[in-house]
Length: 366
View 1: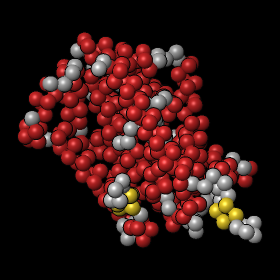
View 2: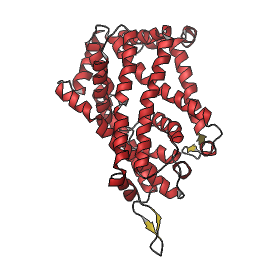
View 3: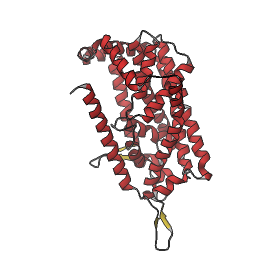
View 4: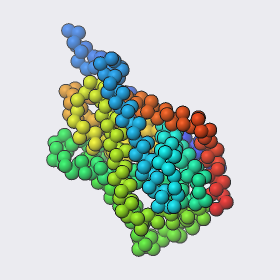
């Protein structure tokens, strides 16, 4: 199977997973309000709940959700620029912000989740002859962002460890197996520590013979240089820690955007829940093949944002509210990243296909 066939096959898998999750979510929620014999509303319908966010009395929360998410590319650019400087690649904060914003736009509107990363890698490589190192910064930026999200979640979780609502919240897997929120996030951190040891520990690398594995991979010279570029950060622990802490700012404004989306629906839940549950939703959704997280995010939100978390009395209504909250957040996110499209058009940027072909050419000549 050639590369083009594999790409379309992987896209088909993501589309099918998203469609299956959407069907699963849609079958669980009531679309219209349910009333009793006296005409009183027993359970609000999803359509009415979602429309409430766009009514005149709630619009200011929707504006706040958009404004909060617009800050995320700025903090992301700040972190990425620092990683570039360690590799000897210098971009101004303005240029890093521009490329990061364009990356956010492509990651949001394109079917895959790496389109924006390809654009960032292409331009970072274009500005320097250290192309493998530039690609490594984009890879590490995403990894550190996810690790920082998990660490922030653990810190908040530690302060709320005995809170009954958090202790009782579980993720039910197929087959009936359930994992608590604590087990999910601690398991991810455990795997992250093992991964870091595999990348940065010389002893573990010798024991696992990772160098032999790298030697067998396609485009081995480029892969080897990327591996060596990532290994450089082993000697910059303070900078890596600072990058992780910087990611907290980006995650905080994104979480604030989701919280404002919930407030736009007329809810008044505790912000603490969002700093614990949204990182878990994003982390788990990132490991599920889908189109931009569509489907898995809504499904996971139903699992974690229960009636007790949202401050609702009806568990059935909570299922609709959780999905409506994520969809309102998606609306806010789409509006917030539109300036990335303007920046892309004004500066005559390449398409993702052109950038991907250019990076493939780089790989072939390494």
